[in-house]
Length: 229
Figure 1: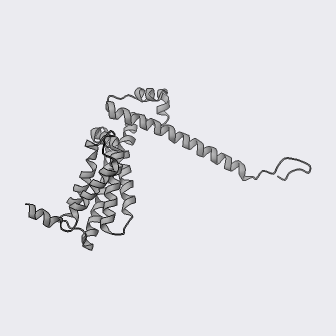
Figure 2: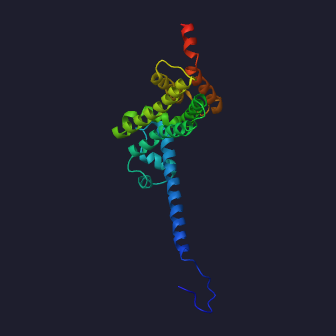
Figure 3: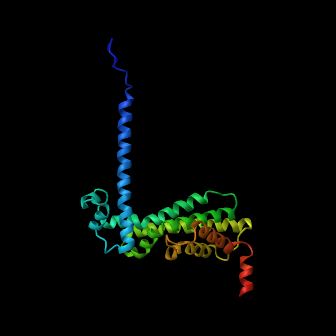
């Protein structure tokens, strides 16, 4: 509608109302995600320190100074919270591996970057990994199946890089599948010994492990192994 003659009211574009509502929705969504992540963080800490079975929803609510209904506004049950907490470590490693594997400059550079990214993610999310292995049997069957598929995807990504390196003459392996499992096993197991108070910087650990990964498959490694038998 056009402005009446003589009116001092400014013209307001018709889309301004829509933009305002869109911003309001975006803010509400961001606030909801912040509150959801606060609950996840509290659950992670309690599951890690007390164990999943000894932690109650009341404990999580108390840690956040909120009522129990607040938790149920975001999660239907404690087991749903466990699914989110236990899955996050694997999800983050998968994202890191997929991102690092996009670099296809040469097999050695790619495998080194993937190993570094995998290890870094595993270290940063080591509490999630501890809860995953400790509470594995408490996870719903479909969640366990989904996580197994993601871990298989990680293994196959690394195996494909090894096979690429074998074709280009950079790597050697009698059984690439076993080499891949050995590499992912070494990097995954960091959760068992790494703690946040560890005095060795994460960068140093990631560099050392990625160097070891390359040594495992680099051309000459098999002949070196045979000479040491």
